[in-house]
Image (cartoon, rainbow, N blue to C red; front, side, top):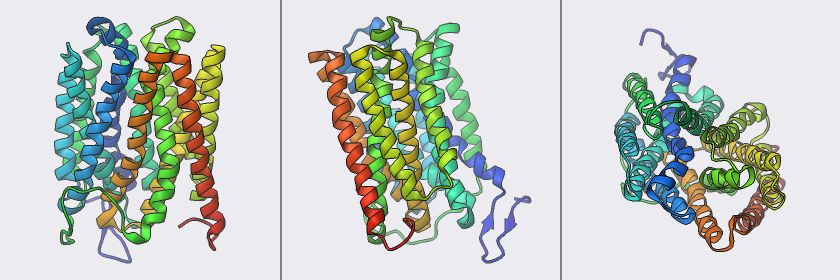
Length: 408
């Protein structure tokens, strides 16, 4: 490209900053799809008929597809390149839009969620690594920030678009997926022109395997998972059962309100990352653990007092907790993992987070069917608060045990 320049200390071509921003667009576009269905489940529940437990199973099928994708996409991306993974993922996301728009059964919703999860798994490994590749070795911190913010902003924009369009446009369960298909097509164009090179390192090990990191980077991965996993589990709960909580507390099924709460949650996740970006990575992770803990305390208070402002506060704190856990984890990996293993490292971080995010909300959903939403949310909040506290203590302990001022 004529606008690229050559780094003075190497032969690597460094793309202009605007390309780093554009490289993050496919991440945003796919994550819009990841949560676009959230405000629409009340419509499908009404038309198809299924319980809160079934709803969380539909949500968890997304986690199954995502984790299955992560077992493959990170390794394939590091060996074959970012584009050979991103382009099929975007095609599968487009197929998910079609299935969602025509869904008339739980089976169709499950298929659409599986497709979405597979696409998201490819994007969080190959897409986030592509942002780092385009940024170059001198801009790893801004690459981690943009990739992380692209993910959470897209995750929040999806339910907001779905809520607004389903209330104001015809075909409430169709229109948002038509709009999303247009966004995905623009992401395809961005990937086709993205200035990334094919990897040259020889392939080592199995193609399908549990993603991991080099042995010397195991500590960074563990610290990231310790905070990121409780954070993303908190936001997953709000996405899956948040509309039911709002319906019980407000007596409303407004999809705009449900979508707006999810958008506000992820907007908090985006904004907090810019606010804390200059802090040390250990401080970011510790703050993320505190935010998730406070979120669960607020959730328990909200369901017992029927206080909507406290529920909104819980959602905002959950978003902030995920945002800081995600940024801290990605920054640790970007700063230490070699480029030829970076997509696999990103996949490993997300496997660690999404396994918990799949198990706990599903358990809470079925528990809520059995003992009521208040009891289910209380147990969920207590368990997750304990896990967040443990994650924070792990980070603080690692920082105190290090001879360096900051985590690497």
